[in-house]
Image 1 (cartoon, rainbow over the protein chains, first blue to last red):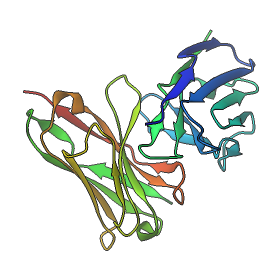
Image 2: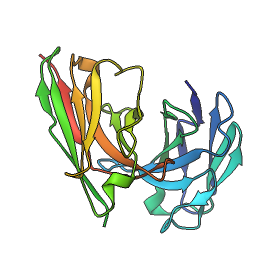
Image 3: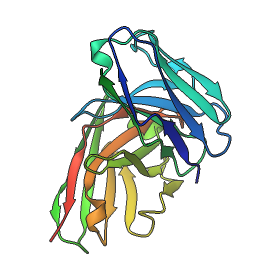
Image 4: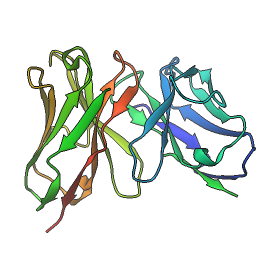
Amino acid sequence: DIQMTQSPSTLSASIGDRVTITCRASQSINNWLAWYQQKPGKAPKVLIYQASTLENGVPSRFSGSGSGTEFTLTISSLQPDDFATYYCHQYDSYPYTFGLGTKLEIK
Amino acid sequence: EVQLVESGGGLVQPGGSLRLSCAASGFAFSRFTMNWVRQAPGKGLEWLSCITSGSGTIYYADSVRGRFTISRDNAENSLYLQMDSLRPEDTALYYCARSRLGSDLDYWGQGTLLTVSS
């Protein structure tokens, strides 16, 4: 199975900050990576798919990059609505796997 | 509007069985691969299983293979997860999710809670 190592597990930041979350795959997954945002009591919501494609309706302050085994999610200027937990997800091969999540907290 | 509504969760004793359902609407259900994903309380996401549009291909996570069975009824726009030999570690919120043309999971339901406890 492909292991997804996500870091950091917790991130404290302030409104307006630029933040980056990293996800590393245990083997190449090409560009078959998605990023999800999850708020308490809600289902995950896709932000980015195919490593860098922004989902319709997602603010442009979110961006994704990377290929192969190293990927990043960047939020260019944190807004109050962005404080949530973020997960990476590989869909290159089954079983699909997720990172353990990054909880983005207000500093 | 795409909607996925899970049902069937509840409290089950260890060793018991339960069947979850997911009612889909707002899209051509029969064209899409569908998935089950779960989230234990306070934990991350765990993909469990998927079934292709015509039920021709099915995959499972090791943690549920042999105990859980995914199925679908395209005439009823419904997805199912039959869960047998349930364990306390199966306690979680169970989501159904649509695969975007064999890609990521673009729509999710709100989940149904399973608790396995004596």
